[in-house]
Image (cartoon, rainbow, N blue to C red; front, side, top):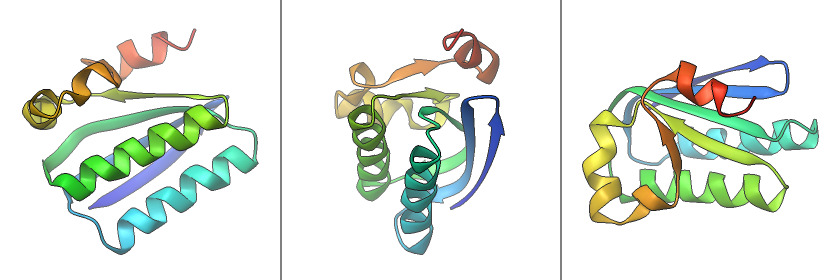
Length: 111
């Protein structure tokens, strides 16, 4: 897994690519979320377009991020969930996350 993050005004956009299976990258991901929250940036858009695959650790990473952001009074949404939609549906987490078909639609949800 690799990720890049950019700041657009008060919106943090994190693009994840590869296979989400835990490890050092997961720890770094959580660290970045906490850094932005300390900077009072609490709106997060996670773009999953380039994710190839995700296991239960990856699901845990997303759930943990959602919990962290919500506890800070923020909002986290997912975009481009195509490749992980089945695992979100099977685990019934599809109803827990706000999700959008594109980054553009997700961006508009913060307006």
